[in-house]
Image 1 (cartoon, rainbow, N blue to C red):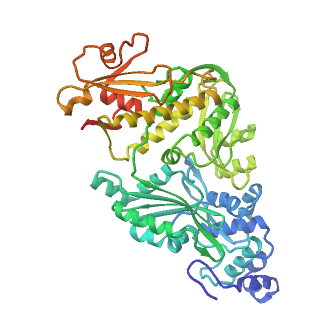
Image 2 (tube, rainbow, N blue to C red):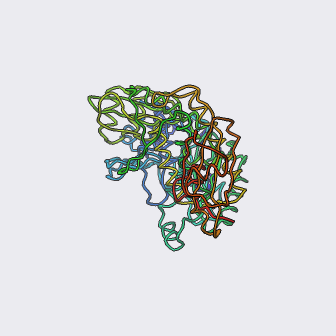
Length: 551
């Protein structure tokens, strides 16, 4: 029987398992062999998942992710996985070990729960009779064997070059958001020490890949960018590899650090779409917009789904990664008494109504909370819950605007991401005209889509597009010109009509600065700031996120 460290690979496992019910001597010595032949498809799916998620060494193996994995990777009926886990434990095919710990399913919020660990109990050796028969039955049922520690396998078999260039690699089954992967890498002691010594995060590489129809997320940390580039090249080379009939596919990669994203730009687009201001709470820092629409919780969630679908088509690849827009996103919503729940779903664009018993599951964390919720929601294998997005006590109607609430969440993600990035430098020179024009055209295009496709604070419908006029005062030492006054106006017109002029004579007021550059602007609304603040605003950045310097 041939083994390569990841389970028995010989083709004999199938015929051996088919003869197991007649192996009376083996059954007498190990009663588990007989019960293996009685397992249902769902029980075999759970057993296969526990085998594949078995940790290396003394790592934790919480049962809840294995049950979710049984549904998503092996197609188990979600409603039967808990019973299957219990029966497998009773039959001594897995070991269930109680523990109290912070449950942390990838991408989900943790709760202090008493959740058991689940470990396969099929014999220590890869060629143990019980393990061989289990593997054969799994292969007959699902068309493939269960690979022990499969998340480690994808690294050691296909990303070995990436692993050798890095100093930390973390891999797990399923799909995780980019910022979650970066946080996982940062959590390793080696990463923490490196950041403390160097004063910055080390280069990271996130990889989303599939082995056949199984999905994996990988993140690796490197000492320098050159090593990361070599690691990425090695990962790209794994694409298309055939492994025992299963094809390796590198779906996408993401490198960090890269560059900052304009964290405020969506709020500018909302203003152009509605004409309404957006405010930030001084105490909490959260963005909000007054709305008296009295939306139901279903409509509240649906508008957020519509916004996400719009942004998916209106953002750069970097922004789609930062805001986790690559996956479809929906919500499960419900209310009970005065409590409202909004649960984020992945793999769907629908808004689902939570039944009272489902709200109860969310409101009262208990072991296997997410398994029980996904079971109750009857989610198909390609859908999953991610997190409790909102949980609060209030009246049935929601008073804040859902679009701004969703954008605030994205703003928080952008600020977290930008804190890791090198400083962005903008030259205060004629070349800034192209940068500002591109940003203005980008924001106006999004504003038109928002105004025509989405209701925000009661506003919807066509609004006039605007052009842009910007005047910078350009006097004195170059090193201080970013602190000199600037003014802009947005007259109705073609968004691509962006004019920027530098005024070289002294002026005393914003109105005089604008008039010196463009003539009388008394019929226009003028906005003034320093050149630094003006460029930050026009490009969609938060204060201090970029550095503006004269040539």
